[in-house]
Length: 548
Image 1 (tube, rainbow, N blue to C red):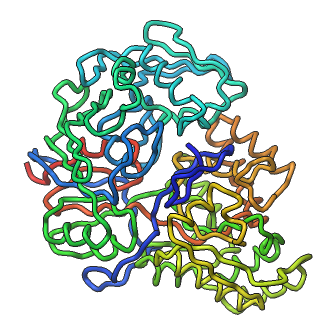
Image 2: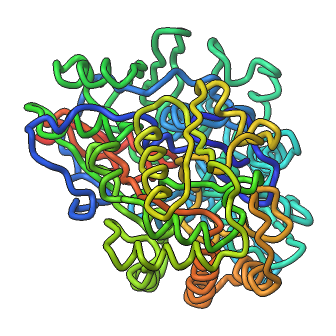
Image 3: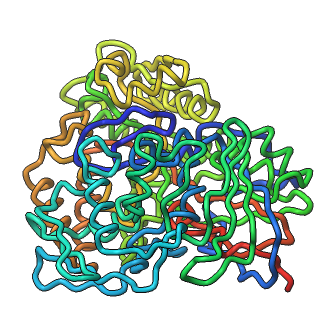
């Protein structure tokens, strides 16, 4: 996948794969029961209790209608939320954010640059045809085509070939620690070769089938109204308890109203504000799960934040706790790294311990933090000769962050100026250097698609086009490349801890907060994951009634 902002459709070419979470693009009213929310004290649970009873049909809400259901050509949260139940991947992201084989029965590594995938037997597509190695190879090669969303995931692949009746062998230019994690994302989607070719350019549009093998079939898409999934009678795995899932789309206020009145049965809320508005509502239960989503400040090439000491000073003075409370309904936890804790798909204790050692991103700056920040400004080799221009769109969450940045700059003797653009224009700044030429820093939020922090940090490599401030460190580059080649989780985690320390010391980006995945569900229902895994695994297959 390409780098995208929360609101962007355009992408940045580069070495990193990124997708927008839209986790903080807007905000709503206080919580439904009037109780304060403290994200740092929320209990994050990977999943909900196991369902016991069958359900004929549920109505589910999306933030918007998918532009396409072909994730190779148009990725997005809405499309993934639907298709995770329809289209299976070679590996599967688990609720606890670990990765396991799925359509792969077994993997082996004859050497550090070779991955052999033995495919599961007995898998059938929705048209009744069996999944073959040819289908898998076709799918992988389609994902790898330069114009496709997942092409970046295949940059280290030297060759992909069918090497036995149920076997695919992938050889790499160098060892690749992230490839199987990518295969748990959209790079691992397996399509029916014949069905995709039959649909041609219409694949993924209303009126077309799905060409997949998951627990649900795409049974209807009424453009502008709804998408309907029906449990597949030919599914090779365990049959879902819920027979039909009907998706509608609504903005925050309509979503809150529909869930509150019972017109809808559930939603993974895209915005913490909407989630906060639903907290404590009668007849609804809310769950919070691990996510990689974060809010951050991205300094640009314009130069107002070119000096790392100025960036460090700003990080020390931003009121992260205040931003979470006033901009995100309390559902934004002050955070010191640019990836959320859901990225800790392995060695969780190692990453948690490292996170606690960061002091450069205080939740609420005190007098000592302000004094230190002022000293950093004094010793900076260059200070801005005019206002630092803060770029944002008009959504409330981003506006709250922008105002907090301006207030923080004022505390250290610098002037900030907020420049607000319509979302349609603001999105261009993420994919076009010229479109962000008037900004010194952008307010942004997103998630990374992999449950591994190293999936983010190659954005600061010296040659990365996502490295806007021009951070250059041969030592950093060497360490990142080593981590990307290190298959052993424990060794890679130790490398990543050092890498994120270097990233923080240089303040390449300025982290603000992490936001959880929020599932709001009719209190009579249970079963689906509460974590970000819903974007990549069949969450509706676990949905059902609490009572049998």
